[in-house]
Length: 214
Image 1 (cartoon, rainbow, N blue to C red):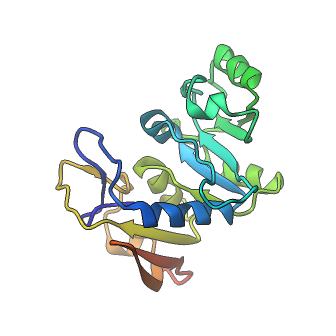
Image 2 (image 1 turned 45 degrees about the vertical axis):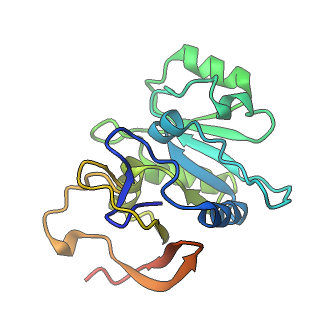
């Protein structure tokens, strides 16, 4: 969810709530239609989300997946406290400390080590392949700007659902997509608009990957 000018938080980090209850309910429905919900470590630390489906009377819960290269998400978080109730999978790099591995394993989480790429980031192509091989083929990313930028830059996004609330946060706010190093328009990932819906006082636009990048 973003403001009209594409910001997902204020300069101080406040983000709850940019969109209203109708939009949040729709997100719960979207979670329910996927095998997994994916976030990065920054979102897990900043928002302490539960990432579960709530308020719809549904038993199905997607696997909650966190990308954390060094496993630096507190085990005492909402995810850690409920890892034995709803599955939590942690994708990490080889440098993740043994103490954090033991703590998360003891909490009931599944740990998946994945190679890193230049810059030290987790190889998200490899991570998604591991998820697919485990049967998680519909992955719903709710991560912040850094994870969004990594997935977009890697051409790993099939669809976008962009929620916009009717407020403006300004340039000092946190952008919805992090730095991607794009120098020319021809380098930008391209999507084609499928539809735009009004959701309460907000909007959501649905975009599909444009296979023709020219």
